[in-house]
View 1 (cartoon, rainbow, N blue to C red):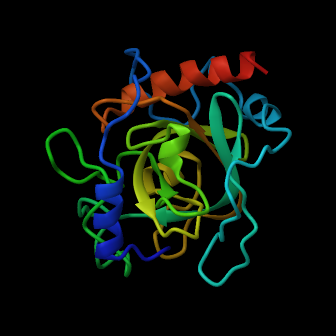
View 2 (spheres, rainbow, N blue to C red; view 1 turned 180 degrees about the horizontal axis):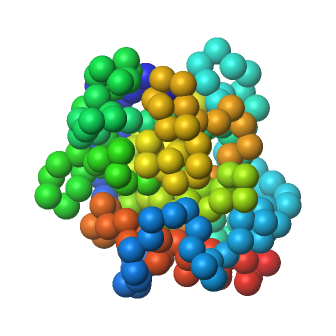
Length: 232
């Protein structure tokens, strides 16, 4: 679990104030309770689209503090992606499973807020964490902002999520409690997640509004994933 210092979260919020390009239209769909629904794009099809890396970052990221920097951010016409671990982000609104007792690094804030002004709920909302802008990479320049839609792939499962928080400038590979749970991982913020094998795909110039609309994130993610695979 990476430490999110208050200063970093505040800086991330200021740097990433919404001013996004035209959002992808969210299409209504039935509620999903699993990572992949019937008829959705298969994990293997998404991964096949990522057979080569055209690096767009000006360097590489660490998966954890103290580890070597080995992870590049790669780009296609429609998305950016990276392959890393998954650390559990429990930051945001305190809940039964995400709080200072369950997570020693818990911070009651996220870079982005819900439409009602409250912080995001990591226990119920699948979201990913992107590094704060730096000389390595600025996700805003790639059309990735708060509320952008992402597909997270792990062991044959696909979990659609939104970009919901920012992390340290030199590390990558983090997602919310709910995202990890949807991927079938142990979601304990102390010892959960995955050490490797997780692929994050963030679709450029996409957005779900309000950011907390999980149903819209799934519907939009499935639509963009189908286009992404079809354009291979």
